[in-house]
Length: 228
Ligand code: CA
Image (cartoon, rainbow, N blue to C red; front, side, top):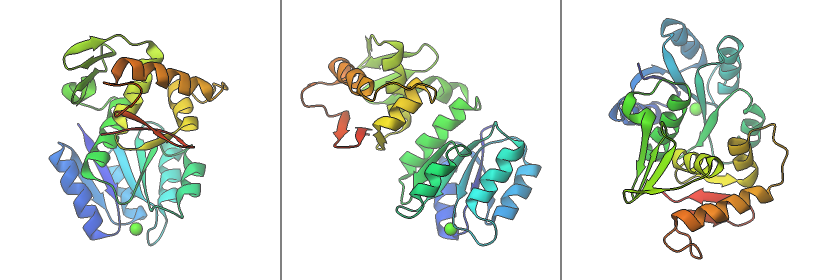
């Protein structure tokens, strides 16, 4: 069952999220406060992903995240953050949460992030757990293959992991540190240069014109972004 919990005290934002997740095929459990969210999670043990707003009356989203993690390491947690002030706190919190989405976000961005976490927690259905289609690209996560316009592109395991990371994070600027963590793992203490080298090679394989990339763009002084 693809069940998602949405904790958000602002009714209009909650409604927007709920509608879009239902449209994407998810069953949604709603909560307006942290206390209610924890209660609902007790009742719905099959929730696979929780979206947690941070600023709430009563206990805040960080505390909710901490309490969920105290007993449940399996559930996927995405924090809903405001653009500016909460970023540092979120970074500090990444041990507990799996991901965060910055408001305002598009329905496509939100569902892509929930889909990605669903896949990782093994709760996706057949279709969404095997393929990510972003024309002209088709990523098959079971065979670990990539096609562009129906033609297979041969990738190394690392290049595949980078593509997977990008396609799961459409439109999101990813720092080189973040990419290193996501692809090589947190225990890898390599140089950031390895990120650039691999992305340069990947561009040669997937871009129409590698000297003027349009899919993987550079975010100067920061990292890279998948333009979808
Ligand atoms: Ca709020």
